[in-house]
Length: 590
Image 1 (cartoon, helix red, strand yellow):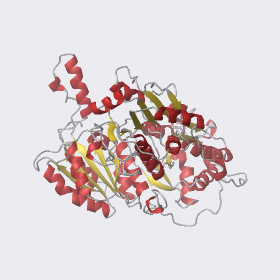
Image 2 (image 1 turned 180 degrees about the horizontal axis):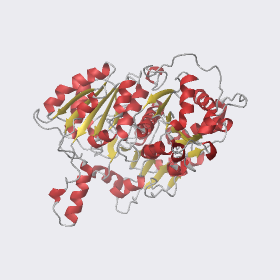
Image 3 (image 1 turned 45 degrees about the horizontal axis):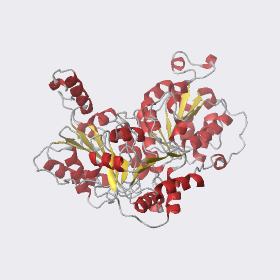
Image 4 (image 1 turned 90 degrees about the horizontal axis):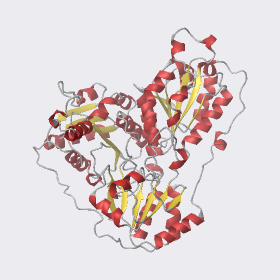
């Protein structure tokens, strides 16, 4: 990727909160050391909802660092802070910081932390607590905002945590935390600072620390023997299939994935839960893994004599949806390092998949090694039915949009712009929207938690500033409403973003579950909507957007109204604004 297209590189948000007066000339308190360490690590932003437990750190960022590197991003909920950092990581593959206030803020943020954990995204979470020395606590408030072993609330879904006891230990903890967060398998980390550490004056200056020497890159490529074994299986296969799961945003890694598929003539399966890893318009792209495998993909898997899986999320569950019992007759090569962070609390490790050869190594490095080992000769694809043809025409202008119509109309209106699709609903299908670049799509929430989409969209759009790419997110109405106030942060910091809400006025996924239960129990399925529909009163999503300074359009009820609304919303975003279109869609999934 050339520098122009490098996301997050020096493209700061609007300076709307510059401090006045002279800055502190040197580090004088423990929190100054913490802020200084974040600066030395090149952490660009710290998303936060303020709280007294980290008032010392807050002061240090403002009055010692001048609110720059990291620059504060004020959020209206702790979940938003962590989700913005998750969205940033999806684009940059780097950790930005998020601060959460004591135990109460951590509890607010816990769902977002779980999303980042399941998404394997690095986030540096700064926490705080009241004085560990009980004799120093203010009455009432500092007692209820102090917890013993505060990190125990989230320890099962962070990679590492610490509660350092001195400024020297805090500096080391933050450096270690960022290093661990950004080492594959990546994930969130938590550093908890008590008030005393932050607010007590330094007894003496700390010696300088070159932080770059304490976070060495961890490169875990495949061994020559494992590459040789994989090569032998590949050369003996006549009907190989590739499943690309998680992969980096690097253009070279993208090119290698394409090259490997072309060397093998292998149909490629990808996953909408993960970011863009392979061009969906390539003749070898068969489609994406969904909750239930589509017939043509299941047929490819059953017929394959070799399946190459590269850090595929839930490869075992995918195989179960394709093959009864989940064990295909073909050999399976599974390349992943995800097993290194599986634990006994969270079941995000999924079904245990079969594997005839397991390669515990970085997937990008393994693909590159296989491309090198196999040479340049390309094979013809062995299957004539890689993917079915689909009707991609919009329906009639006066029809109420399906989610499919929403996608097709939106992509048509965006034309030849280089677009990044930041988030989608679970109703999405890959055939509606071409993914043609490592920055074209950024996957799902990770842990399936609602309220994630809006914050992730804002964080991803922040990282894309200055990249030349147009940021757009398609969100469900339930997801949007749970995270709606993150729009204020995007507007306040001038982060351009288009959000299109696929609004069926319901928690529709649960309507389907109630329908299944009713059929199973021979009860009235027509009652499925009760406790699900968001009606009476109808919620004005456009007004929610306008109330936070964004452009709000809708409700849009026909395809013609949608096509008429899109140009104005796109223009508002290209002028540097935030726009939302409320599209009332027919309930249903792809």
